[in-house]
Length: 223
Image 1 (spheres, rainbow, N blue to C red):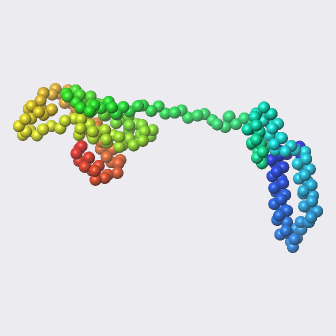
Image 2 (cartoon, helix red, strand yellow; image 1 turned 180 degrees about the horizontal axis):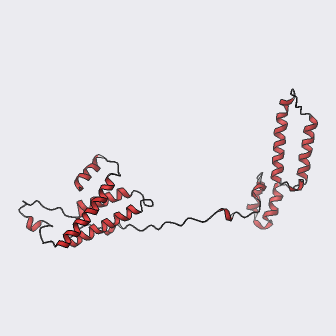
Image 3 (tube, rainbow, N blue to C red; image 1 turned 90 degrees about the horizontal axis):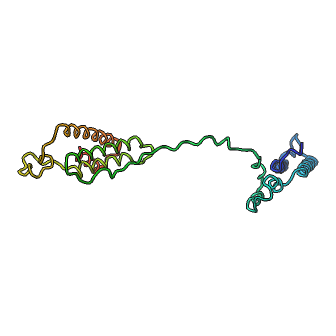
């Protein structure tokens, strides 16, 4: 029925009729002749269909209402705007939103800049291992975790923890951090365990980063 056609569908019919009339010239010498009477009948049909349907602007304003403002009504001047105004709810098509991930903060400042006792060394290593585990478990949400872990362990092992003096050094007993005071067994075991974990993280990161000349020197110094 003519009354069921929307204004946008009437415009599509008019476009199709124009295209058909433009291609009719190629049918002059074929068996399927397209006469002027056919074109006139097609134009009359399009005019009759357009007479029973509202123009695009009026059809859109009926759905939007007069109190929507001039800015919204001005959008109705675009052709084929009526096809977008079906009056149906599309909220059910959106679906459920994905839950945002819970990203734990990585406080690199937990690792101190200097240590003064064996307990401070253990705490610094423990914080570094914990931060490396957080970065490893959240590498999908935090960028450049391998570089962060390498830089953290490099700073800890070369700048924070003092290096031991040689055994033949004349002032080893007074100036060496590791020989100035005795170390208990539980502190030694804790240090070895934390160093083992830190070296595992450092080795995993070294095989995950492109090796350059400067980074190769870092690997040799740290290991």
